[in-house]
Image (cartoon, rainbow, N blue to C red; front, side, top):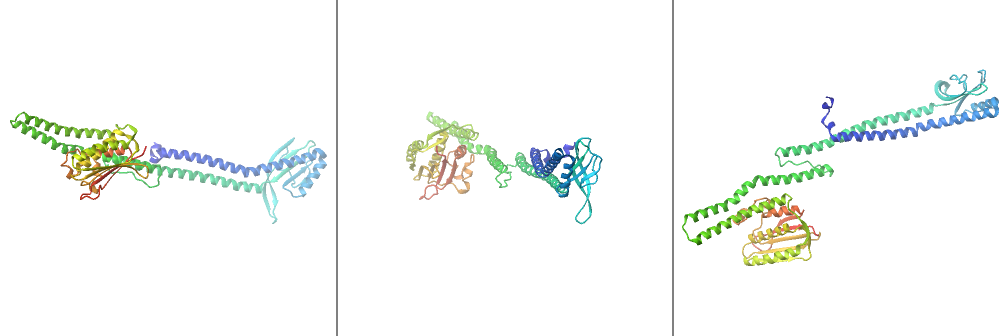
Amino acid sequence: MIIGRLPAFTRTTTFRLALVHTALFIFFAGALLFYLFSATAGRLERDDSDALYSEVTALTAAYASGGFSRLSQSVSERSSSRGAFLYLLVDAQGTKVAGDFDVLPAQPPQAGQIYVPFSYDARNYDGQVQRKQAEGRIIRFQDGTVLLVAYDIGARGEMVKRITDVVWTAAIAGLVLSLVGGVIVSRSVTRRVESLARTTEDVMAGDLSRRAVVNGSGDEFDRLAERLNAMLSKLERLMIASRYSGDAIAHDLRSPLARLRNHLETSLAQTGDRQDFEGAIAYSIEEVDRVLETFNAILRLSKVQGGQSGTFDRFSISDQCIELAEIYDAVCEEKNRTFTADIKSNLFVHADKSLITQVMFNLLDNAVKYTPEGGAVKLVLRRKRSGEIEFSVLDSGPGIPESDREKVFERFFRLEEARTEPGSGLGLSLVSAVAEMHQAKLSLTEGLPGYATPGLKVSLTLASA
């Protein structure tokens, strides 16, 4: 029940990753602060302990070498020198012999030595009595003599306290900052993810124009948003094409089917000879072939756009263009068009040869179809300065208005003046699909200069192999 009431972002993967990051940060910060404490306050404490041990060892050695008298002399000298240590020497009867205190701060052991922390009163430079802290060791020797060796921990204690306070403050601040940072990072990432999720939900709801927000930071979310937008743009184009495909097919097939029906009806109504019936059948076959050609074009385009076609090999596009030039030189001569070719030799590409050849045929067929008699068609194959291979077809026909140059790549789109010519409106759609499949650049510009009409230049730029 409690988990259900938590904010939504706390149940996300990004929040859990932020918690892991916070835990790692806290562990690192704790280890660092422990090391700093050990290297400062701990070091001071160890140095004091080592110094106390050395002092006790030195006085024990004095007792072992000279007995009580030697020990008493050493304690008196050390006590009068106002060194870092505090002393008290008591004989076997419990009487003070030398030192800084009058009585022992704790009961001495029966034998050996013990560690003793204690408080004592001392006067400062102003004559005021202050309570101070000390640590030391009480040693009982074999003859009953008791020795106290201690040192004042006031200065060290104050420093240790300050260091401890700093360490705890830093630890708490690090914990708070890591948690706040984790929450901020988690919510920021969650917002980006939720934005992408809302985009996909809107698209699923039918808003095909919806696009993911690109912040411009260039991070992985921007790259994901850019890829998603590219996918949505392609999806929108395909959906629009699918939405209008039925109308376009009906529009483009209605004319040949109506002509076919009318011709058959007229032929049946007339009583002609065998030659008339043969002519009617030939005409019907021609119209049916046009219908089949349209459907075959649809199937080819669907295969290319669906990724079902494509066998990539290295081949000479120069040789392919030379073969096409020979074919279309004869075609243009028959149709009273001028054909020229400018083909650079030894140019190779890595592509699907059959599809690239189909693209070339489509472009050359369109150029010949829409160029009026007395016009010109030109084929150009060259290597650009960037190293890429550019295949271009130029003509002196009516061209395509700049406002329609993007539309002509859509399925079944045909310019009004082109509807009088036979065709399915799929040629340039196939060219565009093949170019996209090969990651090639496709551009439309004005064609051959020097004619009354602007003409058209279609360029396909492929990577060199």
